[in-house]
Image (cartoon, rainbow, N blue to C red; front, side, top):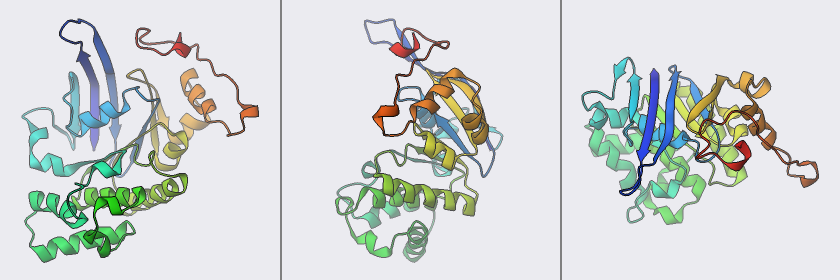
Length: 279
């Protein structure tokens, strides 16, 4: 369904600087229809950059990106309305999705007005269906974003993405800003809906427990590169790279008496931008 070949993103330095920052370097992966592919790693490793490139929000420096066999980086395919409907992104901060000046109904209706030829009754029926699917009711449409909780807003963001009937959903840390109890509810909901509708998901997270619950395939990212890929079971139970093992070991119990200092002594791809523990 999704094929990414040798994808790279390099940011140029400022006006007076010749330095360059490589955010993503030669990344390749594929996601089959109906699968959930996870990218895990620390903040700043390049995970979100990949998500934004796939969503058409960033232009890559080089590489190829295919959806259903079509290279969408050519012929301005990413700028078309059809592409924006087919690829939806769920962001970390749910309150940034809904316009604070509008009632929820208007925010839910707007993308339907853009991408579908439906009358008002058909749009209301479609919105209500997806609200019910994510555990909300039509009464929520009459509220403003500030009247809803973070969990409710994330459910609405999920419902709005689903209403576009997308081929691919990119979920970028969709639960990291929520309380732990709410996180569990949202993840259970996403997993249930993903299986029910055979959704294809690119799931980006720093939380290994979340990745293991949601994803069938995992890529471990460090300093812009994939250092390990494989099935979720294989990566977590039998890691092949020291960096992967370090990430797993970092997810320790909250009891500080059993914690220890973690040191990474493996290969560092870019010492200039690498953190101290990689040196």
